[in-house]
Length: 522
Image (tube, rainbow, N blue to C red):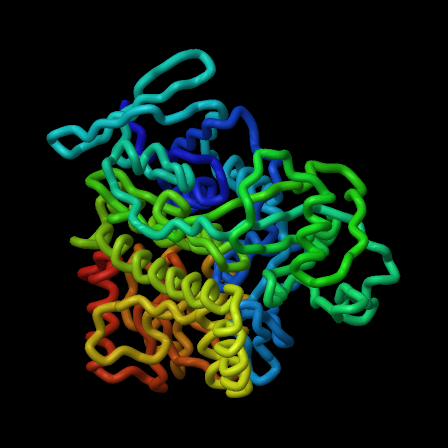
């Protein structure tokens, strides 16, 4: 028996991919080496386009605990520990969702089980070989009851930065190792009178206010204060060229580090409430991108494909979840036999370009937070540039990943083509609906906002592989959008009634992405 897809890794990325494949009618098998979900504190939230992506799958409400759709941060954010005044922008691209990684795993696991996904805990991939005929990959697995083999049409490595899948495939992982930086983090308590009730800032006498969740740089290092809802505050420091030590991390070590970075003492007490709590020291880090994201019938997503240092907001997790959404529908189309030629190749092309943007993000922020008078001078010049709304927008979009635009193959694309779908409030015959609610089936969607629903009434443009929805929008909006299952715009029009050239471009997009060559009822 051949399994359609074996996913090595039951973390957020692997579970997200499993959900995407299941929505597309493919039943994956998830193998996770841990015997049960990890309680270890890791990422503390999600930032950028991935927050909107989760909303488009109906996952924002269980993660946020609120039925309200995601709203952008319109006040401030940070780039390289420098403030981005988002109030300068008419519409902010920065979305943030503070939620611990273990909660993300819990929600995705529950969704995967609901969709019928089998998850085998305590099962680890130990070997693989791709068959000469190219029809399958053989996977060796070690489980609680011994070793066994699986044959799968595809294997996806979602098994982290030290990916066994990547190593077994012989895929290199070039990049840069940073060995000068030491990051210390701990859950703590701070006196209530040190917290500004209006802003949530941590008041540090002798130094000043430190805003929550935003990295703060001094000449001697970095400091951050993150009061996660429902959890003790997380305090972190970053220092350079610290002497090596084999001693276990302690709260006193963090207090001393804070004194060096800020120049004053901050009263930090042990955390309250149920753990597990963070108390760790990390030395060094890596920024690496795999030589290739695919090798035959083996694919890599998440940290198995790319890791980043010196950026905030959990960039690896944010990028990895979007890897999963990009790969899922393409892999499912290939398995169903409906994928047009070359579709799977676009996973590497598109996600590598997104990874390169994140490398740029990581390198730029690393340069801006480093110690030294020369960096301080650079930051002063940079602060002047940050008064310009155009500069703020470019950096906000880079931070959020909102500047990612895929090449959809159109000679003269609409401004929205290749970008993530816009937020639209719509009116349909069934009632008001948000565009995000129409994409939760993970199917291709042709949204028709033309006069008289002209596209929806054209038989040659209807096909059973693509959902067609006619609607109206009160706000200014494009008149038509063709969305891929990952919610990126494959084609768009702003004409009240698209002209023949636009219609031919629409037909080309239907062929290119979904293999649609003729209507279902021609």
